[in-house]
Length: 419
Ligand SMILES: *Cc1c(COP(=O)(O)O)cnc(C)c1O
Image 1: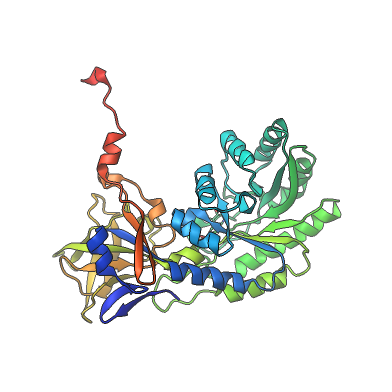
Image 2: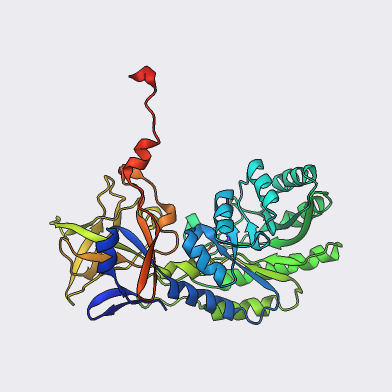
């Protein structure tokens, strides 16, 4: 459930009419709802009530905006980061270092040093090579890094190939059948305290069965590791729960997920870490856009909006569906191709889509843009980055300024030998 709804025929975010944000901040603009973020954070946490000892670490990559992180910090969430840039954001939002987990397949030496200096809670090691390097660095600094070994359980998450991470030939984690041997080798290193295992099999999962089989495999691995004399106190179950992008689409609820987790892990006797991203932020944001014009097409018309693939990349990247909706719908509908202004045919949000009737100058939104939206922006076609806003009841604030093309131009140099 979210807090974007029609009131007196005008789409609102909580109690703020979207035309007000468009007037004051311009378009395109991301609009996040605090009440929705808080609701999702609460529902996810309550779904895990049966899990006695846990850390819920928001996947910062899904929406790294400082204000969004602050909302989640206030909800008791930690952070799952995949770069020191994200770590700095989490720290800047007031998230305690010990509640930060560092995942990612390509942590550099410099990143490891900065994260060790910050005193983060856990490194999720993605390979034997990385573990040995981290051990050496930590030992050199006179520290011991708390770590989990990320396992590739070789399950098919049944999601889009580009966001599937737990198949045998994906780049993430160590193959489950080599995990025992690699764990043994890393556990003997001085600079690391290898205390657990981690999995994350993919994103936008529409079915919890693959998660359940991954967790079950992990359970067997944990028993094996304990049998070999290792102490396992922490297990990170990753993120991945999908959200509805289409009206009426039904996905596994956090409650179903929580019940499955409680059942599979009941005898593990560990602290569980969760890394939800999309399920918290996805439906807590929309991308508000203005229709530039409607152009006749060979078949259906082209609705050209002022947002583009550089602002919201998911349709171009994954063929993803984002619901398109007029801010002041007339009740009439049309079949249209919804496109941005960028000079690529890939800059297409929807083809032959039945949608609200819109005309030049109308406002509209792309729904479910709170996760993997603004954060994937590029400056392609010298379009800059769009502003982000956070609504709270009947007020809103700009939580990220629009970054115009000039900022990029000013960061560039023409060497004097070209003058
Ligand atoms: C992307 C990612 C997540 C979050 O995935 P969601 O599908 O947004 O919940 C969690 N953990 C890791 C390691 C990730 O890479």
